[in-house]
Image 1 (cartoon, helix red, strand yellow):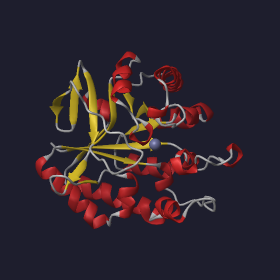
Image 2 (cartoon, rainbow, N blue to C red):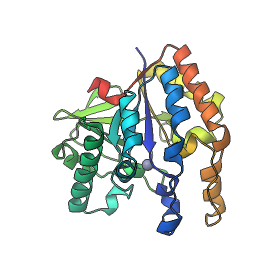
Image 3 (cartoon, helix red, strand yellow):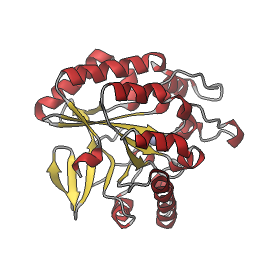
Length: 276
Ligand SMILES: [Zn+2]
């Protein structure tokens, strides 16, 4: 059986690091209100997913998170405020995540077991703290060195539990996959901007060939990549404008085509907590 773990990192456009300098008053919520098309599509395909939620958004809009949870999706945690983990002290990390986890659990009335660090910024030290906070798994490991914000976890003390899943004292780490092009070069193929930038045909090909030697795949996408509402981008550099905008207009359609392609290939969609 081939498994596809579809995950949504539920955050707003201004949580992206390149909008950090904006005034608080310019940070208007947009995309959290535009998720119905996405979740209706998943319902129509009978797909349940894992949603990593930035808890400050959940606090503002508990009914939206409650609706997602009541559709049968897993609510997991994507931090309190989407600030990078390696810039927080351990004390701040613990108090923020405790607070974030409580917000999400109060809204859904269910235990939150999973964490994904904003921009994959988790450190080895902070990974150790997650189980003490009551989390059962993390999905912040990506084997990719070339992104300036990412931090690569060492996974010291972990052993392979299953394809892309590592375990240490019952705590599991889910690797966001990359595609090995050469011994030294890995290409991120697991979503986000990489999904928007690669031609859909190529993504399909790479995922299919990944499955030749793997049985699991973890994929992530963001609300701003599922809806083409316009955002004021004047203050961004040319490079970041492209990074934000590229292919957003067609991306929901591309995403739907990818899902249908995978389902036609007999790949089964799972939430991460289905296999804990
Ligand atoms: Zn994020």
